[in-house]
Amino acid sequence: MLPVLSIGPLTLPVPGLLVIAGVALGTWLAEKWAPRVGLPAKWVSDVLFYSLLAGVVGARLFMVLRTPAAFAAAPLSIFSLNPALLDPLGGVLTAVAIAVWLAARRGVSWLRLADAAVPFLAVMQITWALRVAANGEMFGLPTRLPWGVNLWGAVRHPTQLYWAVGAVALLAWVHAQLNRAAARTTPPPAGWLFWPFVALSAAWFVFVAGFRGDSPVSPGGWRLDQVSGLVVLMGAAVAWRRLQEPAKQDDLTASSAP
Image (cartoon, rainbow, N blue to C red; front, side, top):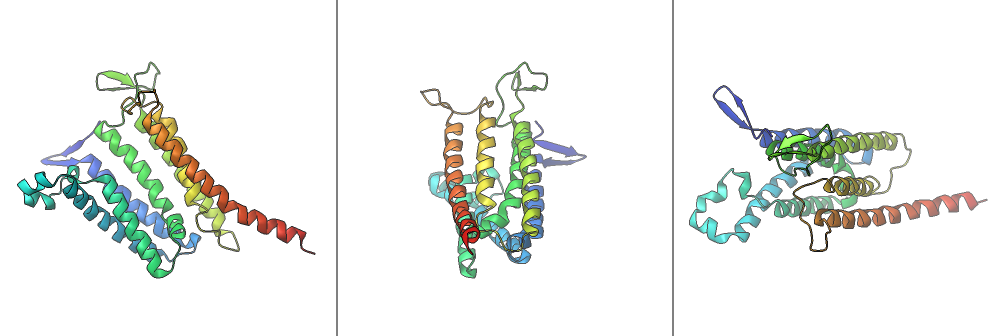
């Protein structure tokens, strides 16, 4: 764990610094690789900026709606910089809604925009894994393996590291796919990168959840994180499969033509 970093008289929150660095790097990569999915680089970076800004505002508003009494007792806390007063799900929903709206205004498919945002999402997965490691969250089950880490009074699986390693590999895969797309003569269909990215991310999440010591378990013994991950994996896999069917049909039609 490394929740804070002390440099002389300064005490810096490591998780917050990691998130800021991840947003900057992810936005830069999304802007750099946007032309490979057929979108203007500047427009993609603008959409990410406004979506993230709206996401922060939405996260605070959702928290206010969830706990109105707490904010009524201290109204100025609405403007607090404390990240604990943000609702993550509300922030994500707001950011996605704004991104979809901006795409619709420009006449761009939301799936095409999602393809362009994949590099940003891949970097943020790495960032989030490092963030929870710095906070000691998402800790693993006890283990006797030599790479176990001492945390919360036991030697545990470094589940945050497992997640980070998988996220780095996923980012490398994204880079390879975008390089292939750059060599194509025709643009790939919208969603060609987003759906497999979601499916692979969910698959790795399910794998890592099996080693977590803080994952909630249902009365039947099912790990709820794995169940939710499997649902996302199946949904993304079905969408990915359907996306490939028209391309295969076109190939069959072209091969049967005289």
